[in-house]
Length: 170
Figure 1 (cartoon, one colour):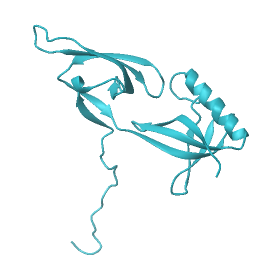
Figure 2 (cartoon, helix red, strand yellow; figure 1 turned 180 degrees about the vertical axis):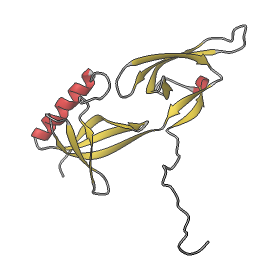
Figure 3 (tube, one colour; figure 1 turned 90 degrees about the vertical axis):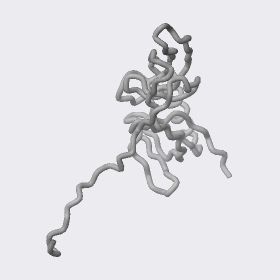
Figure 4 (cartoon, rainbow, N blue to C red; figure 1 turned 180 degrees about the horizontal axis):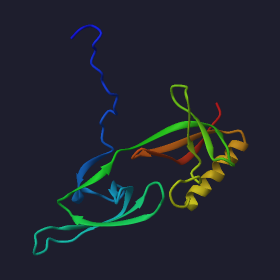
């Protein structure tokens, strides 16, 4: 190879998976799992005894962590289910626009994060009652000039504001 003939490397993602496998029998109430492509939190799980074909079944009832929609799944307890990597982070909320739903957050490194909306501005489904109440609380605290810390839940490439707290002024 001559000096002017350098290899070309295409840029790609890190290749990290958004989910990891876990045995259905190990799931507990409050665990996360994927049902029909949706990240869900287990609200009820029951296992049946082994039948004549040898597998104990796990009956899972779970609620989508972003939309609040209820999903059910029935699978052998010895089989693997996909569990999403979920991450909670807290950022200081700088501005929230009630008309457009845009939110500005301050990250730990001092940079601005402007790619999130208020929980009532959803792309899939309808906002839940909790979402509507959270937006009221955020806008009221912002109008009162309080310092707001917003908790963001991220899973499967989606982020959502799930709670807020008012920071006491020092």
